[in-house]
Image (cartoon, rainbow, N blue to C red; front, side, top):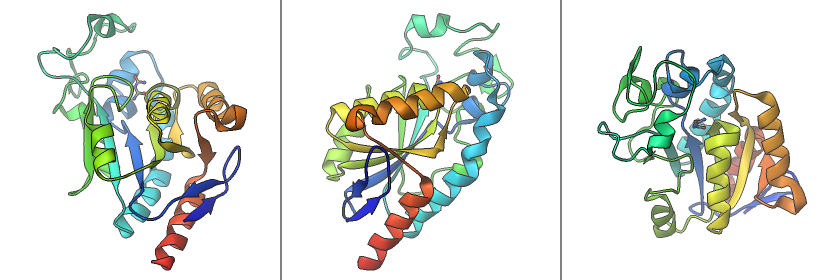
Length: 227
Ligand code: C5J
């Protein structure tokens, strides 16, 4: 066990095997021009800023052979898992399922739907395909975490106030102890990131904790030495 300096108070990282890193939706569709993020009217350029931090954090987990979970927001090619309301949203001329510069938008297996190469999953890492914003909705995530006795989640990825926050709230409701890695998450809207960071750890940690990637890495190294 190790203590991570965090808000609203230290986060206790349990023994190895009980915690996992979740990297949410670091996909070309959200980070690159021509993807779903941009067609919703967003300036996607600011999201790349967290990639070096996530690479270092991911490498630390890999160095210690710790569980890593990647998620992708995506839909089946026939859109059978996509509610019509989601297809109607946005203000561009293209929508989910249409052909864009990186293939069909937000469709499983299309080039634009892939995780960016810098953070591509490797063998042994869990990849969760999700049709909703939260990673627990209609996925095998909860069952898989339970099977592995994982109780603590270090949460990262994009976008802070949408898929990241939704997943953190879903996890919290299922009893997981969650720490949102502040410099490992980003939004198209800096003010929304800030608001999310403040709201999830308000009221004594109503949804969880906020900490830094460096603090998580230091805690892992200290636990690693104990083993
Ligand atoms: C959005 C996500 N923003 N991954 N998805 O639609 O946050």
